[in-house]
Image (cartoon, rainbow, N blue to C red):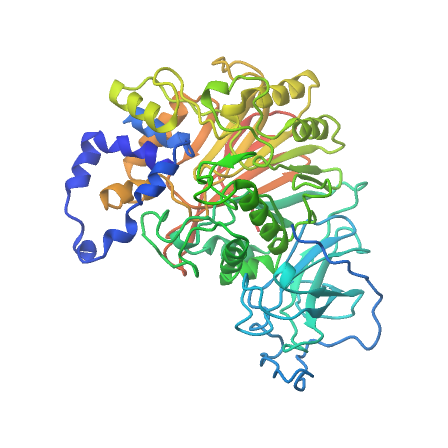
Length: 626
Protein backbone atom coordinates (compact mmCIF):
# COMPACT_ATOMS: atom_id res chain seq x y z
CA UNK A 1 0.00 0.00 0.00
CA UNK A 2 2.85 2.33 0.80
CA UNK A 3 4.21 1.59 -2.68
CA UNK A 4 1.12 3.03 -4.31
CA UNK A 5 1.56 6.36 -2.59
CA UNK A 6 5.28 6.67 -3.13
CA UNK A 7 5.08 5.96 -6.86
CA UNK A 8 3.97 9.50 -7.78
CA UNK A 9 6.92 10.85 -5.83
CA UNK A 10 9.09 9.57 -8.65
CA UNK A 11 7.65 12.34 -10.80
CA UNK A 12 9.51 15.00 -8.85
CA UNK A 13 12.77 16.10 -10.57
CA UNK A 14 15.08 14.80 -7.91
CA UNK A 15 13.57 11.34 -7.78
CA UNK A 16 13.29 11.15 -11.55
CA UNK A 17 16.99 11.83 -11.74
CA UNK A 18 17.65 9.19 -9.16
CA UNK A 19 15.67 6.69 -11.12
CA UNK A 20 17.91 7.14 -14.15
CA UNK A 21 21.18 7.04 -12.28
CA UNK A 22 23.42 4.04 -12.65
CA UNK A 23 23.55 1.96 -9.50
CA UNK A 24 26.69 1.99 -7.41
CA UNK A 25 29.38 -0.35 -8.63
CA UNK A 26 28.85 -2.64 -5.67
CA UNK A 27 25.23 -3.09 -6.76
CA UNK A 28 25.66 -3.38 -10.51
CA UNK A 29 25.99 -7.13 -10.60
CA UNK A 30 23.32 -7.88 -8.03
CA UNK A 31 20.19 -9.66 -9.12
CA UNK A 32 17.59 -6.95 -8.70
CA UNK A 33 14.60 -9.08 -9.63
CA UNK A 34 14.07 -9.94 -5.97
CA UNK A 35 13.44 -6.28 -5.25
CA UNK A 36 10.58 -5.79 -7.69
CA UNK A 37 7.06 -5.87 -6.30
CA UNK A 38 4.99 -8.25 -8.43
CA UNK A 39 1.92 -7.00 -10.25
CA UNK A 40 -0.26 -9.15 -8.01
CA UNK A 41 0.95 -7.29 -4.96
CA UNK A 42 0.29 -3.95 -6.59
CA UNK A 43 -3.21 -4.87 -7.64
CA UNK A 44 -4.09 -5.81 -4.09
CA UNK A 45 -2.65 -2.90 -2.17
CA UNK A 46 -5.48 -0.58 -3.04
CA UNK A 47 -6.18 0.71 0.44
CA UNK A 48 -3.94 3.36 1.98
CA UNK A 49 -1.66 1.67 4.51
CA UNK A 50 0.66 4.56 5.19
CA UNK A 51 -1.09 7.83 4.51
CA UNK A 52 1.86 9.81 5.76
CA UNK A 53 3.90 8.75 2.78
CA UNK A 54 1.37 10.52 0.59
CA UNK A 55 2.32 13.77 2.27
CA UNK A 56 5.71 13.46 0.64
CA UNK A 57 3.97 13.61 -2.72
CA UNK A 58 2.25 16.82 -1.84
CA UNK A 59 5.43 18.22 -0.32
CA UNK A 60 7.51 17.28 -3.00
CA UNK A 61 -9.20 -22.04 17.48
CA UNK A 62 -7.05 -24.27 19.56
CA UNK A 63 -8.39 -25.40 22.97
CA UNK A 64 -6.27 -24.38 25.95
CA UNK A 65 -5.23 -27.59 27.73
CA UNK A 66 -6.55 -28.00 31.23
CA UNK A 67 -3.54 -27.99 33.54
CA UNK A 68 -3.95 -29.31 37.03
CA UNK A 69 -1.44 -27.36 39.12
CA UNK A 70 0.15 -29.24 42.00
CA UNK A 71 2.46 -28.27 44.83
CA UNK A 72 6.10 -29.20 44.42
CA UNK A 73 7.76 -32.08 46.18
CA UNK A 74 11.31 -33.17 46.81
CA UNK A 75 11.25 -35.43 43.77
CA UNK A 76 10.99 -32.63 41.22
CA UNK A 77 13.23 -32.95 38.17
CA UNK A 78 16.47 -30.95 38.21
CA UNK A 79 17.87 -28.71 35.50
CA UNK A 80 20.01 -31.49 34.07
CA UNK A 81 18.73 -33.26 30.97
CA UNK A 82 18.06 -36.89 31.87
CA UNK A 83 19.10 -39.55 29.40
CA UNK A 84 16.31 -41.96 28.55
CA UNK A 85 16.03 -45.39 27.01
CA UNK A 86 14.26 -46.23 23.78
CA UNK A 87 10.52 -45.71 23.99
CA UNK A 88 8.19 -48.73 23.95
CA UNK A 89 7.28 -48.28 20.30
CA UNK A 90 10.90 -48.73 19.31
CA UNK A 91 11.54 -45.15 18.24
CA UNK A 92 14.86 -43.92 19.55
CA UNK A 93 14.61 -40.63 21.41
CA UNK A 94 16.14 -37.54 19.88
CA UNK A 95 19.46 -36.52 21.34
CA UNK A 96 19.26 -33.50 23.58
CA UNK A 97 21.91 -31.04 24.56
CA UNK A 98 22.61 -30.65 28.26
CA UNK A 99 21.28 -28.88 30.25
CA UNK A 100 18.28 -28.55 27.95
CA UNK A 101 17.09 -29.66 24.55
CA UNK A 102 16.91 -27.11 21.76
CA UNK A 103 16.25 -29.66 19.02
CA UNK A 104 13.02 -30.73 20.71
CA UNK A 105 12.02 -27.17 21.65
CA UNK A 106 12.97 -25.75 18.26
CA UNK A 107 10.51 -22.88 18.50
CA UNK A 108 11.52 -21.72 21.94
CA UNK A 109 9.38 -20.90 24.92
CA UNK A 110 7.39 -17.83 25.87
CA UNK A 111 4.86 -16.45 28.31
CA UNK A 112 2.04 -13.96 28.02
CA UNK A 113 -1.04 -12.17 29.32
CA UNK A 114 0.23 -11.52 32.87
CA UNK A 115 -2.36 -11.21 35.64
CA UNK A 116 -1.70 -10.70 39.37
CA UNK A 117 -2.02 -14.44 40.02
CA UNK A 118 -1.47 -16.09 36.64
CA UNK A 119 0.45 -16.09 33.38
CA UNK A 120 0.24 -18.10 30.16
CA UNK A 121 3.18 -20.45 29.45
CA UNK A 122 3.82 -21.66 25.89
CA UNK A 123 6.06 -23.96 23.87
CA UNK A 124 5.97 -26.48 21.02
CA UNK A 125 7.36 -30.00 21.18
CA UNK A 126 9.13 -31.37 18.08
CA UNK A 127 9.61 -35.05 18.90
CA UNK A 128 11.16 -35.92 15.54
CA UNK A 129 12.64 -33.67 12.85
CA UNK A 130 10.07 -34.96 10.35
CA UNK A 131 7.14 -34.07 12.62
CA UNK A 132 7.15 -30.52 11.35
CA UNK A 133 4.62 -27.77 12.11
CA UNK A 134 1.49 -28.04 10.02
CA UNK A 135 2.30 -31.56 8.82
CA UNK A 136 -0.16 -33.32 11.18
CA UNK A 137 2.52 -36.00 11.62
CA UNK A 138 3.24 -37.43 15.05
CA UNK A 139 1.58 -39.02 18.05
CA UNK A 140 0.22 -37.28 21.17
CA UNK A 141 2.72 -36.56 23.92
CA UNK A 142 2.49 -35.67 27.61
CA UNK A 143 4.40 -32.60 28.75
CA UNK A 144 5.09 -31.39 32.27
CA UNK A 145 5.41 -27.71 33.12
CA UNK A 146 7.10 -26.29 36.19
CA UNK A 147 7.32 -22.83 37.78
CA UNK A 148 9.96 -21.63 40.24
CA UNK A 149 10.54 -18.21 41.86
CA UNK A 150 13.33 -16.24 40.19
CA UNK A 151 16.15 -15.08 42.46
CA UNK A 152 17.55 -11.81 41.16
CA UNK A 153 18.23 -12.25 37.45
CA UNK A 154 19.50 -15.81 37.76
CA UNK A 155 18.15 -18.49 35.44
CA UNK A 156 19.02 -21.23 37.91
CA UNK A 157 15.87 -23.26 38.44
CA UNK A 158 15.13 -23.73 42.14
CA UNK A 159 12.20 -24.94 44.21
CA UNK A 160 9.20 -25.84 42.07
CA UNK A 161 6.12 -24.11 43.47
CA UNK A 162 3.60 -24.91 40.70
CA UNK A 163 3.51 -27.70 38.14
CA UNK A 164 1.15 -29.68 35.98
CA UNK A 165 0.79 -31.99 32.99
CA UNK A 166 -0.85 -31.49 29.62
CA UNK A 167 -1.22 -33.64 26.53
CA UNK A 168 -0.68 -32.17 23.10
CA UNK A 169 -0.89 -33.63 19.62
CA UNK A 170 -1.44 -32.93 15.94
CA UNK A 171 -4.88 -31.40 16.53
CA UNK A 172 -3.14 -28.39 18.12
CA UNK A 173 0.10 -28.74 16.14
CA UNK A 174 1.95 -30.06 19.22
CA UNK A 175 1.83 -26.65 20.87
CA UNK A 176 1.54 -26.45 24.64
CA UNK A 177 -0.29 -23.53 26.23
CA UNK A 178 -1.14 -23.56 29.92
CA UNK A 179 -2.54 -20.98 32.29
CA UNK A 180 -0.27 -21.18 35.33
CA UNK A 181 -2.42 -19.95 38.22
CA UNK A 182 -1.93 -19.57 41.96
CA UNK A 183 1.05 -17.22 41.56
CA UNK A 184 1.96 -14.18 43.66
CA UNK A 185 1.44 -10.63 42.34
CA UNK A 186 4.34 -8.55 41.05
CA UNK A 187 6.72 -11.52 41.20
CA UNK A 188 9.31 -12.81 38.75
CA UNK A 189 9.23 -16.52 37.99
CA UNK A 190 11.17 -19.07 36.00
CA UNK A 191 9.44 -21.81 34.03
CA UNK A 192 10.31 -24.84 31.91
CA UNK A 193 8.78 -27.84 30.15
CA UNK A 194 9.71 -31.54 30.30
CA UNK A 195 8.64 -34.21 27.79
CA UNK A 196 7.24 -37.20 29.66
CA UNK A 197 6.86 -39.82 26.93
CA UNK A 198 7.28 -40.50 23.22
CA UNK A 199 10.42 -40.30 21.08
CA UNK A 200 11.72 -37.21 22.93
CA UNK A 201 11.05 -38.49 26.44
CA UNK A 202 13.13 -36.68 29.05
CA UNK A 203 13.86 -33.60 26.96
CA UNK A 204 13.92 -30.41 29.04
CA UNK A 205 13.22 -27.00 27.57
CA UNK A 206 15.33 -23.90 28.04
CA UNK A 207 14.39 -21.94 31.15
CA UNK A 208 12.20 -18.90 30.61
CA UNK A 209 11.55 -15.89 32.82
CA UNK A 210 8.24 -14.13 33.30
CA UNK A 211 6.48 -11.73 35.67
CA UNK A 212 3.02 -11.37 37.15
CA UNK A 213 1.14 -8.08 37.34
CA UNK A 214 0.88 -6.20 40.65
CA UNK A 215 -2.27 -6.62 42.71
CA UNK A 216 -5.17 -4.41 41.68
CA UNK A 217 -5.06 -2.65 45.05
CA UNK A 218 -1.40 -1.63 44.78
CA UNK A 219 0.12 1.55 43.32
CA UNK A 220 3.44 0.67 41.64
CA UNK A 221 6.10 3.34 41.32
CA UNK A 222 6.21 2.77 37.58
CA UNK A 223 5.48 0.41 34.73
CA UNK A 224 7.85 0.13 31.79
CA UNK A 225 7.04 -1.78 28.60
CA UNK A 226 7.95 -1.85 24.92
CA UNK A 227 5.58 -1.93 22.00
CA UNK A 228 6.26 -2.88 18.41
CA UNK A 229 4.61 -4.25 15.27
CA UNK A 230 4.98 -5.30 11.65
CA UNK A 231 7.67 -7.99 11.45
CA UNK A 232 8.26 -9.20 7.89
CA UNK A 233 10.64 -12.19 7.90
CA UNK A 234 11.99 -11.74 4.39
CA UNK A 235 12.57 -7.99 4.78
CA UNK A 236 15.17 -8.23 7.54
CA UNK A 237 16.33 -9.61 10.87
CA UNK A 238 14.44 -9.14 14.11
CA UNK A 239 17.30 -7.35 15.86
CA UNK A 240 14.84 -5.20 17.79
CA UNK A 241 14.16 -8.18 20.04
CA UNK A 242 17.87 -8.52 20.81
CA UNK A 243 18.02 -4.93 22.01
CA UNK A 244 14.91 -5.41 24.14
CA UNK A 245 16.38 -8.54 25.71
CA UNK A 246 19.64 -6.69 26.39
CA UNK A 247 17.78 -4.04 28.40
CA UNK A 248 16.38 -6.34 31.05
CA UNK A 249 14.29 -3.53 32.57
CA UNK A 250 10.86 -4.15 31.04
CA UNK A 251 7.76 -5.49 32.73
CA UNK A 252 6.20 -6.85 29.54
CA UNK A 253 6.09 -6.36 25.76
CA UNK A 254 3.09 -5.42 23.64
CA UNK A 255 2.96 -6.56 20.00
CA UNK A 256 0.27 -4.68 18.10
CA UNK A 257 -0.10 -6.95 15.11
CA UNK A 258 1.34 -8.09 11.81
CA UNK A 259 3.34 -10.74 13.66
CA UNK A 260 4.16 -12.02 10.19
CA UNK A 261 3.08 -11.34 6.60
CA UNK A 262 1.00 -13.76 4.57
CA UNK A 263 2.55 -12.92 1.20
CA UNK A 264 4.43 -15.36 -0.97
CA UNK A 265 8.20 -15.07 -1.13
CA UNK A 266 9.66 -11.86 -2.57
CA UNK A 267 6.31 -10.09 -2.66
CA UNK A 268 6.86 -7.39 -0.04
CA UNK A 269 10.49 -6.89 0.94
CA UNK A 270 12.08 -3.44 0.65
CA UNK A 271 15.39 -1.66 0.19
CA UNK A 272 17.49 -4.76 0.86
CA UNK A 273 15.46 -7.18 -1.20
CA UNK A 274 14.87 -10.61 0.26
CA UNK A 275 17.20 -10.75 3.25
CA UNK A 276 16.15 -14.27 4.21
CA UNK A 277 13.64 -16.71 2.82
CA UNK A 278 10.45 -18.16 4.22
CA UNK A 279 10.44 -21.91 4.68
CA UNK A 280 7.43 -22.03 2.36
CA UNK A 281 7.41 -19.82 -0.74
CA UNK A 282 3.70 -19.64 -1.47
CA UNK A 283 1.04 -17.34 -0.08
CA UNK A 284 -0.34 -18.34 3.31
CA UNK A 285 -3.98 -19.39 2.97
CA UNK A 286 -4.54 -22.73 4.75
CA UNK A 287 -4.26 -23.95 8.33
CA UNK A 288 -1.06 -25.89 7.76
CA UNK A 289 0.54 -22.87 6.05
CA UNK A 290 -0.50 -20.45 8.80
CA UNK A 291 0.96 -22.88 11.30
CA UNK A 292 4.12 -23.03 9.24
CA UNK A 293 4.43 -19.25 9.05
CA UNK A 294 4.07 -18.99 12.84
CA UNK A 295 6.68 -21.70 13.25
CA UNK A 296 9.07 -20.00 10.84
CA UNK A 297 8.74 -16.73 12.77
CA UNK A 298 9.50 -18.36 16.10
CA UNK A 299 12.84 -19.73 14.89
CA UNK A 300 14.39 -16.25 14.90
CA UNK A 301 17.05 -16.41 17.65
CA UNK A 302 16.61 -12.81 18.80
CA UNK A 303 12.86 -13.27 19.10
CA UNK A 304 13.36 -16.52 21.02
CA UNK A 305 15.68 -14.84 23.49
CA UNK A 306 13.30 -11.94 24.06
CA UNK A 307 10.23 -14.14 24.38
CA UNK A 308 12.02 -16.23 27.00
CA UNK A 309 12.69 -13.08 29.03
CA UNK A 310 9.42 -11.11 29.18
CA UNK A 311 5.70 -11.87 29.07
CA UNK A 312 4.06 -10.74 25.82
CA UNK A 313 0.64 -9.18 25.28
CA UNK A 314 -0.29 -9.59 21.62
CA UNK A 315 -3.15 -8.71 19.31
CA UNK A 316 -3.50 -9.37 15.62
CA UNK A 317 -3.85 -6.84 12.85
CA UNK A 318 -4.53 -7.89 9.25
CA UNK A 319 -1.49 -9.78 7.95
CA UNK A 320 -1.94 -12.64 10.41
CA UNK A 321 -4.76 -13.53 8.01
CA UNK A 322 -4.70 -11.30 4.89
CA UNK A 323 -3.97 -7.68 4.01
CA UNK A 324 -6.65 -5.17 5.04
CA UNK A 325 -8.93 -7.80 6.52
CA UNK A 326 -12.45 -6.96 7.66
CA UNK A 327 -15.47 -8.95 8.85
CA UNK A 328 -16.52 -10.35 5.49
CA UNK A 329 -13.27 -10.42 3.53
CA UNK A 330 -9.90 -8.84 2.83
CA UNK A 331 -8.22 -6.83 0.11
CA UNK A 332 -5.69 -9.65 -0.26
CA UNK A 333 -8.30 -12.37 -0.72
CA UNK A 334 -10.05 -13.33 -3.95
CA UNK A 335 -13.15 -15.30 -3.05
CA UNK A 336 -13.30 -18.64 -4.84
CA UNK A 337 -9.86 -18.43 -6.40
CA UNK A 338 -8.29 -18.33 -2.95
CA UNK A 339 -10.96 -20.34 -1.19
CA UNK A 340 -13.67 -19.23 1.19
CA UNK A 341 -12.82 -16.19 3.32
CA UNK A 342 -14.44 -17.43 6.51
CA UNK A 343 -12.62 -20.75 6.27
CA UNK A 344 -9.34 -18.96 5.64
CA UNK A 345 -9.92 -16.58 8.54
CA UNK A 346 -10.85 -19.42 10.86
CA UNK A 347 -7.64 -21.24 9.89
CA UNK A 348 -5.55 -18.15 10.63
CA UNK A 349 -7.25 -17.68 14.01
CA UNK A 350 -6.83 -21.31 15.02
CA UNK A 351 -3.12 -21.16 14.20
CA UNK A 352 -2.79 -17.86 16.07
CA UNK A 353 -4.36 -19.19 19.25
CA UNK A 354 -2.24 -22.33 19.04
CA UNK A 355 1.04 -20.50 18.55
CA UNK A 356 0.66 -17.30 20.59
CA UNK A 357 0.67 -16.95 24.42
CA UNK A 358 -2.82 -15.47 24.60
CA UNK A 359 -5.30 -16.39 27.30
CA UNK A 360 -8.16 -16.28 24.82
CA UNK A 361 -8.36 -19.68 23.16
CA UNK A 362 -11.60 -19.86 21.21
CA UNK A 363 -13.91 -17.68 19.17
CA UNK A 364 -16.69 -20.27 19.11
CA UNK A 365 -17.81 -20.09 22.75
CA UNK A 366 -18.33 -16.37 23.13
CA UNK A 367 -14.72 -15.44 23.83
CA UNK A 368 -12.74 -12.89 21.86
CA UNK A 369 -9.23 -11.57 21.34
CA UNK A 370 -9.76 -8.06 22.71
CA UNK A 371 -8.99 -8.06 26.42
CA UNK A 372 -8.22 -5.96 29.48
CA UNK A 373 -5.14 -5.83 31.72
CA UNK A 374 -4.20 -3.88 34.83
CA UNK A 375 -0.94 -2.88 36.44
CA UNK A 376 -2.25 -2.09 39.91
CA UNK A 377 -3.82 1.34 40.19
CA UNK A 378 -1.17 2.86 37.96
CA UNK A 379 -2.27 1.65 34.51
CA UNK A 380 -4.81 -0.39 32.65
CA UNK A 381 -4.53 -1.58 29.06
CA UNK A 382 -7.38 -2.22 26.66
CA UNK A 383 -5.94 -4.40 23.88
CA UNK A 384 -8.11 -4.10 20.77
CA UNK A 385 -9.10 -6.33 17.86
CA UNK A 386 -9.76 -3.96 14.96
CA UNK A 387 -10.21 -6.62 12.24
CA UNK A 388 -12.83 -9.20 13.19
CA UNK A 389 -15.75 -6.83 13.65
CA UNK A 390 -15.12 -3.97 11.24
CA UNK A 391 -17.19 -3.17 8.20
CA UNK A 392 -15.46 -3.01 4.83
CA UNK A 393 -13.12 -0.07 4.29
CA UNK A 394 -14.92 2.61 2.29
CA UNK A 395 -13.90 6.27 2.20
CA UNK A 396 -17.39 7.34 1.21
CA UNK A 397 -18.78 5.83 4.42
CA UNK A 398 -16.19 7.32 6.76
CA UNK A 399 -18.82 9.56 8.38
CA UNK A 400 -21.57 6.90 8.45
CA UNK A 401 -22.58 6.23 12.11
CA UNK A 402 -23.09 2.53 11.30
CA UNK A 403 -19.64 2.16 9.71
CA UNK A 404 -17.52 0.61 12.47
CA UNK A 405 -13.87 -0.27 12.99
CA UNK A 406 -14.40 -2.53 15.98
CA UNK A 407 -18.05 -3.43 16.21
CA UNK A 408 -20.60 -1.90 18.57
CA UNK A 409 -19.94 -4.35 21.41
CA UNK A 410 -16.17 -3.87 21.46
CA UNK A 411 -16.38 -0.09 21.05
CA UNK A 412 -18.76 0.17 24.01
CA UNK A 413 -16.42 -2.11 25.98
CA UNK A 414 -13.54 0.27 25.21
CA UNK A 415 -15.48 3.38 26.16
CA UNK A 416 -16.62 1.74 29.40
CA UNK A 417 -13.05 0.72 30.23
CA UNK A 418 -11.81 4.28 29.79
CA UNK A 419 -14.78 5.90 31.56
CA UNK A 420 -14.78 3.54 34.55
CA UNK A 421 -11.03 3.02 34.88
CA UNK A 422 -9.73 2.93 38.47
CA UNK A 423 -6.21 3.61 37.19
CA UNK A 424 -4.14 6.76 36.77
CA UNK A 425 -3.21 5.98 33.15
CA UNK A 426 -5.60 4.50 30.60
CA UNK A 427 -3.67 2.87 27.77
CA UNK A 428 -5.24 1.72 24.51
CA UNK A 429 -3.40 -1.04 22.65
CA UNK A 430 -4.35 0.18 19.21
CA UNK A 431 -3.41 -1.77 16.05
CA UNK A 432 -4.06 1.10 13.58
CA UNK A 433 -3.53 4.84 13.89
CA UNK A 434 -6.16 6.88 15.70
CA UNK A 435 -5.07 10.39 14.72
CA UNK A 436 -6.02 11.53 11.22
CA UNK A 437 -3.54 12.01 8.40
CA UNK A 438 -4.32 14.71 5.91
CA UNK A 439 -2.56 15.92 2.82
CA UNK A 440 -2.95 19.36 1.24
CA UNK A 441 -4.43 19.91 -2.24
CA UNK A 442 -2.34 18.19 -4.90
CA UNK A 443 -1.64 18.83 -8.51
CA UNK A 444 -4.22 17.18 -10.79
CA UNK A 445 -1.99 14.32 -11.96
CA UNK A 446 -1.18 13.20 -8.43
CA UNK A 447 -4.75 13.71 -7.24
CA UNK A 448 -6.09 11.58 -10.10
CA UNK A 449 -3.48 8.91 -9.38
CA UNK A 450 -4.49 8.71 -5.73
CA UNK A 451 -8.17 8.68 -6.59
CA UNK A 452 -7.62 5.72 -8.91
CA UNK A 453 -5.34 3.76 -6.60
CA UNK A 454 -7.01 4.32 -3.23
CA UNK A 455 -10.65 4.97 -4.02
CA UNK A 456 -10.40 8.32 -2.25
CA UNK A 457 -11.87 11.53 -3.69
CA UNK A 458 -9.39 13.45 -5.88
CA UNK A 459 -9.91 16.82 -4.21
CA UNK A 460 -9.60 18.15 -0.68
CA UNK A 461 -8.54 16.14 2.32
CA UNK A 462 -7.62 12.49 1.81
CA UNK A 463 -8.05 9.94 4.58
CA UNK A 464 -6.68 6.46 5.11
CA UNK A 465 -9.87 4.43 5.15
CA UNK A 466 -8.20 1.43 6.83
CA UNK A 467 -7.41 3.42 9.99
CA UNK A 468 -9.69 5.28 12.40
CA UNK A 469 -9.90 7.97 9.71
CA UNK A 470 -12.19 5.66 7.79
CA UNK A 471 -14.44 5.11 10.80
CA UNK A 472 -14.79 8.59 12.22
CA UNK A 473 -17.94 8.00 14.26
CA UNK A 474 -16.21 5.36 16.37
CA UNK A 475 -13.38 7.81 17.03
CA UNK A 476 -15.78 10.68 17.70
CA UNK A 477 -17.84 8.65 20.18
CA UNK A 478 -14.66 7.81 22.09
CA UNK A 479 -13.15 11.32 22.11
CA UNK A 480 -16.40 13.06 23.05
CA UNK A 481 -16.97 10.60 25.88
CA UNK A 482 -13.49 11.37 27.22
CA UNK A 483 -14.18 15.10 26.97
CA UNK A 484 -17.65 14.96 28.52
CA UNK A 485 -16.40 13.03 31.54
CA UNK A 486 -13.23 15.12 31.83
CA UNK A 487 -11.07 11.99 31.74
CA UNK A 488 -7.31 12.53 31.90
CA UNK A 489 -4.25 10.49 31.01
CA UNK A 490 -5.50 8.48 28.03
CA UNK A 491 -2.59 7.16 25.95
CA UNK A 492 -2.88 5.20 22.70
CA UNK A 493 0.07 3.03 21.65
CA UNK A 494 -0.17 2.21 17.97
CA UNK A 495 1.42 0.12 15.21
CA UNK A 496 0.61 -0.75 11.57
CA UNK A 497 1.67 2.32 9.63
CA UNK A 498 5.45 1.62 9.42
CA UNK A 499 6.25 5.16 10.53
CA UNK A 500 6.74 6.89 13.87
CA UNK A 501 4.52 9.64 15.29
CA UNK A 502 3.86 11.58 18.48
CA UNK A 503 0.28 12.85 18.17
CA UNK A 504 -2.26 14.90 20.05
CA UNK A 505 -5.78 13.46 19.98
CA UNK A 506 -8.48 16.14 19.92
CA UNK A 507 -12.11 15.89 20.86
CA UNK A 508 -12.91 16.99 17.32
CA UNK A 509 -10.58 16.91 14.33
CA UNK A 510 -12.27 19.80 12.56
CA UNK A 511 -9.25 21.91 11.68
CA UNK A 512 -9.41 23.86 14.94
CA UNK A 513 -6.07 23.18 16.58
CA UNK A 514 -7.15 25.32 19.52
CA UNK A 515 -9.71 22.67 20.37
CA UNK A 516 -9.64 20.38 23.36
CA UNK A 517 -6.92 17.74 23.61
CA UNK A 518 -8.29 14.55 25.14
CA UNK A 519 -5.44 12.05 24.70
CA UNK A 520 -1.99 11.47 23.26
CA UNK A 521 -0.85 8.82 20.80
CA UNK A 522 2.56 7.18 20.43
CA UNK A 523 2.97 5.42 17.07
CA UNK A 524 5.83 2.98 16.55
CA UNK A 525 7.78 2.04 13.41
CA UNK A 526 7.81 -1.38 11.81
CA UNK A 527 10.29 -4.01 12.93
CA UNK A 528 11.24 -4.80 9.32
CA UNK A 529 8.21 -4.21 7.07
CA UNK A 530 8.70 -1.72 4.23
CA UNK A 531 8.46 2.01 4.85
CA UNK A 532 9.19 5.10 2.75
CA UNK A 533 12.86 4.49 2.00
CA UNK A 534 12.19 0.81 1.21
CA UNK A 535 9.52 1.68 -1.33
CA UNK A 536 11.64 4.38 -2.97
CA UNK A 537 14.40 1.82 -3.40
CA UNK A 538 11.98 -0.69 -4.90
CA UNK A 539 11.23 1.87 -7.58
CA UNK A 540 14.67 3.42 -8.22
CA UNK A 541 17.22 0.91 -6.89
CA UNK A 542 18.94 3.87 -5.26
CA UNK A 543 19.41 3.89 -1.51
CA UNK A 544 18.71 7.26 0.03
CA UNK A 545 21.44 8.00 2.63
CA UNK A 546 20.51 8.06 6.30
CA UNK A 547 19.47 11.55 7.33
CA UNK A 548 18.88 12.66 3.73
CA UNK A 549 16.93 15.89 3.33
CA UNK A 550 14.21 14.08 1.38
CA UNK A 551 13.06 12.29 4.53
CA UNK A 552 13.23 15.52 6.52
CA UNK A 553 11.03 17.12 3.87
CA UNK A 554 8.49 14.32 4.19
CA UNK A 555 8.38 14.66 7.96
CA UNK A 556 8.11 18.46 7.79
CA UNK A 557 5.26 18.19 5.31
CA UNK A 558 3.41 15.77 7.56
CA UNK A 559 3.58 18.18 10.47
CA UNK A 560 2.63 21.14 8.28
CA UNK A 561 -0.54 19.43 7.05
CA UNK A 562 -1.35 17.82 10.41
CA UNK A 563 -0.84 20.20 13.29
CA UNK A 564 -1.82 17.53 15.79
CA UNK A 565 1.35 15.65 14.75
CA UNK A 566 4.15 16.85 17.03
CA UNK A 567 6.86 14.68 15.54
CA UNK A 568 7.21 12.06 12.82
CA UNK A 569 9.88 9.82 11.32
CA UNK A 570 9.12 8.04 8.06
CA UNK A 571 12.19 5.98 7.15
CA UNK A 572 13.44 3.91 10.10
CA UNK A 573 12.69 0.58 11.75
CA UNK A 574 12.69 -0.21 15.44
CA UNK A 575 10.58 -0.11 18.58
CA UNK A 576 9.26 2.14 21.36
CA UNK A 577 9.78 1.92 25.12
CA UNK A 578 7.15 3.53 27.36
CA UNK A 579 7.30 4.38 31.04
CA UNK A 580 4.26 5.44 33.05
CA UNK A 581 4.64 6.74 36.59
CA UNK A 582 2.80 9.09 38.93
CA UNK A 583 4.27 12.19 37.26
CA UNK A 584 4.51 11.55 33.53
CA UNK A 585 4.30 9.15 30.61
CA UNK A 586 7.35 9.02 28.33
CA UNK A 587 7.96 7.21 25.05
CA UNK A 588 11.46 6.56 23.66
CA UNK A 589 11.90 5.65 20.00
CA UNK A 590 14.89 3.46 19.12
CA UNK A 591 15.92 2.57 15.57
CA UNK A 592 18.11 -0.19 14.16
CA UNK A 593 21.01 0.88 11.97
CA UNK A 594 20.54 -1.77 9.28
CA UNK A 595 17.74 -4.33 9.31
CA UNK A 596 19.59 -6.52 6.79
CA UNK A 597 22.54 -7.05 9.17
CA UNK A 598 21.84 -9.55 11.93
CA UNK A 599 24.61 -7.95 14.02
CA UNK A 600 23.43 -4.39 13.49
CA UNK A 601 23.55 -1.71 16.15
CA UNK A 602 20.83 0.70 17.18
CA UNK A 603 20.44 4.37 18.04
CA UNK A 604 18.07 6.54 20.01
CA UNK A 605 15.75 8.54 17.79
CA UNK A 606 13.51 10.73 19.93
CA UNK A 607 11.59 10.93 23.19
CA UNK A 608 8.24 12.57 23.88
CA UNK A 609 6.29 12.80 27.12
CA UNK A 610 3.13 14.12 28.71
CA UNK A 611 2.70 15.17 32.31
CA UNK A 612 0.01 13.60 34.44
CA UNK A 613 -3.29 15.35 33.85
CA UNK A 614 -2.09 17.50 30.92
CA UNK A 615 -2.84 15.65 27.62
CA UNK A 616 -0.08 17.71 25.98
CA UNK A 617 3.16 16.33 24.53
CA UNK A 618 6.60 17.84 24.94
CA UNK A 619 10.03 16.69 23.66
CA UNK A 620 12.52 15.09 26.03
CA UNK A 621 16.27 15.47 25.49
CA UNK A 622 17.30 11.94 26.46
CA UNK A 623 15.78 8.46 26.82
CA UNK A 624 14.91 6.74 30.06
CA UNK A 625 17.85 5.30 31.98
CA UNK A 626 18.17 1.55 32.33
